[in-house]
Amino acid sequence: MAHQDVVENTRQWLDQMVVGLNLCPFASSVISRDQVFYAVCDATTDAQLEQFCVDELQRLLGANENDIATSLLMFTQGLEDFDAYLDLLDWFQQVLEQAELTEHVQLASFHPQYQFEGVAADDLSHFTNRSPYPIIHILRQEQMTKVLAQVSDPEQIYKDNIETLNKLGRPKVEALCPWGV
Image (cartoon, rainbow, N blue to C red):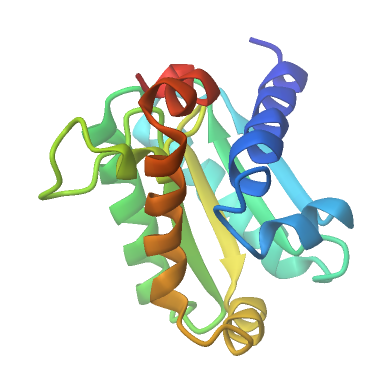
């Protein structure tokens, strides 16, 4: 699949699910200001996937936050298996910790088959983190701290997201997220 198509599919998911359902109340501002960097990876080996993550982390940290506020790393192949994706995500988190970068960035995770541990497989809550491709979202910690300071109960966001999906109902949620079915 062409990189342009991957980016377009991801933008549609953001518009319909993330912004459209207000699953992330912070997303619309960076999207409307065109401050999201979309990085597409076709790599399949662990070494290539890891290098891609490091390169994109360096890109984000080297950029002015007004130009690139946040980065979405989209993987077109090699991470279809959710466990393989989680292995890369864990590796990336360890890199951040070892490099003492957790004060500067944090990771958010999305996958077509995302499933929260300990939650029934058919629970709609999984769709809060389901996306058309495996995605690692690199967020600037300083920006998140500023935004979350304006939210009285950050934990309520997740609860509200689940309530939103439950109100929509399975048929509508699955129509919005056909890859996650």
